[in-house]
Length: 176
Image (cartoon, rainbow, N blue to C red; front, side, top):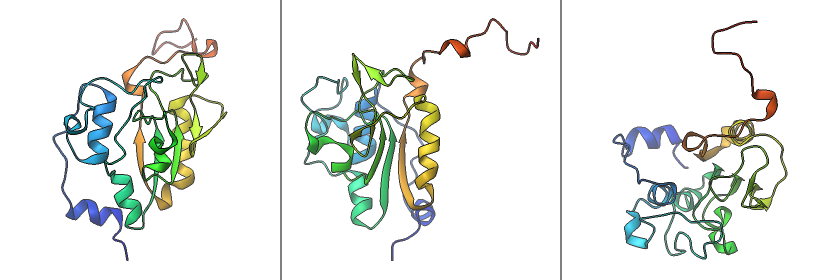
């Protein structure tokens, strides 16, 4: 019988210092492997859409360990750890479910990056409408009760383009 996640958290190591690398790829790699990214060559820079590398396949991820222990796993949000070959995709790295982009800096509404659609569900191209930040919680709720999920937001790092309907000359606190 697998222990419930709350028990694991209560009796496990507590990460309270919030260490992070200066950009997303090394931070995600460190979080998912428990190892410093310099140990496998991802200490600087990003895995870009045209990159022919990613998190080395020999690195075991937290998702793989949880799946092997019987947990159902999911990632909601940006992957950013390689996608040039199927073996590098989230569902090949321990996540049974995946929803979101493989890269950063996608348009929040069209889901396009450098002229190509970058929006996936379980590693298949997906055409769900809506913006990145709003779509994820809705999809998360579908699976929340039975999953150990890793939510990987892009929203805090960049300014999202706004559709015309969101633009207004009103100032916060003013009413018409």
